[in-house]
Image 1 (spheres, rainbow, N blue to C red):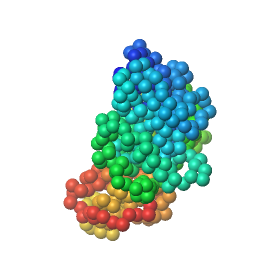
Image 2 (tube, rainbow, N blue to C red):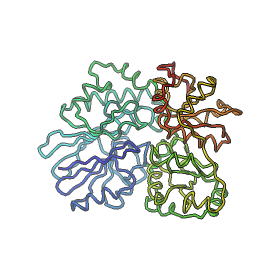
Image 3 (cartoon, rainbow, N blue to C red):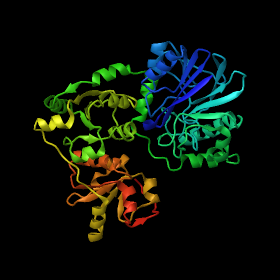
Image 4 (cartoon, rainbow, N blue to C red):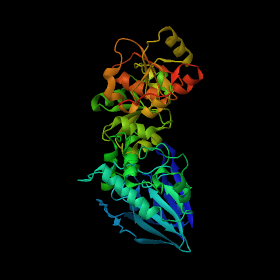
Length: 470
């Protein structure tokens, strides 16, 4: 028996390759499926099952493509309904894989079709659970992402999740290994651990949601308290996972269309495409195409694209360094953005050589930021970190407008005077700056290195403030 976790850091997502006696099961695959095909081919094994723990909202799964290429059987849990051929398992249904078995345990709560898969080894012993978004390490799945809940409330779903954990998961032995679908950084939970594998026994001892003396009412209150609105692209990804999608190879081929500066400019004007710059934040600040949006590949690229662009059908034109086209297109397709229509051949150098206009983001070292605050204490400072980061510690004079909602709070920004903007390390503040500049707000001064650098410069900070309503 072989179990391999294939973890994708930018999505904080874990897919799983399970092999026994020449047969393979894949759990929650990413959309680009070649990795799974290569592993099976190398071991001369056949992909028999593709198990989905639920209809994912934060990424497009590779189940449809993988089934088409291998003949593998797509399996969902009870209550699921798809537009493609699939097996809807019953609670407790057993699937034989080589010398082992995988049992579907219906665990509704995160969504109504959510299912945990219990793997029993060659001796019939409970070995591991693949818990999807039902149980994370240190947390559980949020109950507000299910689509078309009908008369069910978020509190109802939280109650179902409480029962699922108590009746299906907690009775399992402490040495059972927990393989979740996500780790720290995912928007599908609130407080996940950075580790990606653990034992159920350790989770029983430290995960608040598995506390033995916790009442259902306490669980519901804890789980539903402080939930931020889910990103707008989530329901669009659920739809793709239910109904199917275009083969990723076709998406890549369509997007890898090299455009000269003139062709790029014409395409931008004719299609009103988003000009998405995926280079580093330092490169963007130094020079960029006016009205382009920065979301760099070196950060949490796909989640921020989904959170800020919102409509997965909008055409996208890419601005990047050499040889980044395929990577950018794949990472966009993971969250359902399939409409890349081309990229700027030769990048910014070609754009400048063609005599086209460029723009910059004013960015200063933290020492200059400190000097400015000392000479003008009333200077406005905008902190675009999350509310939880801001309430933990922030510059005393700062105001919090999280990046995720900055488009809704443009009127709160000064119109006629310069203001500072920062995040934790510099990535999010440049994203914010690009959005503001595309909206005609140019009086921005970015603080290089963000709050990490600010703390080292002995600038006055506050440790707690009543949470913002943003």
